Length: 357
Image (cartoon, rainbow, N blue to C red):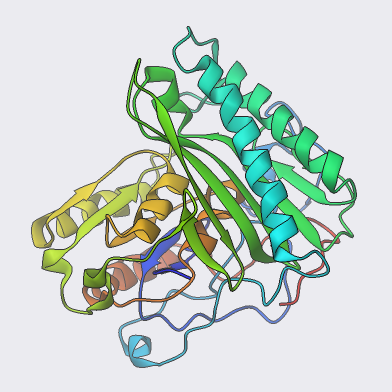
């Protein structure tokens, strides 16, 4: 596979390098805002008692601790990907996953040059009818082929049997704000976990612009490498050199909550802009990760990602490369956030969902 492994920092990712990941021995359900009473509805809506802000679903916590400088020297590099795709052959699983992502993308393509019907999940977090229709189209493909699989959709929440070994994480339109404005980039993202680890993934990225839209399709399976439009892709050679951040083009993202992690990332953005060839902010996490896998940017980091933001992207970039200078700045900043009570140690999952961790 390709490139940089993700370090989850309180629903966030740092795509970089040389980090000793420590997994919790037992997955734990945990309320994002320390509520004493937890709940996992079969479906969630923003108006439900246990909406997104209180939903202790899978956040795919990929690391127990973001390391300090001393820990950076340890040479342990666990893989993020599942050890296998389980009883379903990888060729069969990825074929269905790609079909699902492309079916959702057809819905998006049909709407991309038309007026948008926009509503809001928060002050600035918007959703369109296209998000919902794309998710419905993806769900139909998934259910038709694997009716017993558990599904987590950005719009629909948890659907299906939580005892399934397979969990689909669906972002029917990653980068909705970009889509609403006709600004690239945005994508349809479908990732499937087997026992808690990414097993198959497809991301359909929209490229071009108004009246000139096109797509390219990224795909990956556990142990099978990453591809774009059927061709094998590789990370940038620069990303494999620990002290070449000055020759790197970086990418990051900012969430809708203007909280301490957001402010910290603003400062990191300034620092990395000063020492690298530049930092881009495109606005679609799945696309950012695919760009690392494609080798057109060297690294990506972001705080406060959701499971559907990263389930597909992390599989595209499952190998580790080295940009130590990024970690030397990110690790202390993250430790400072931890000192304020932001917890990085717990792993989120749907109740009763089995994992191999």
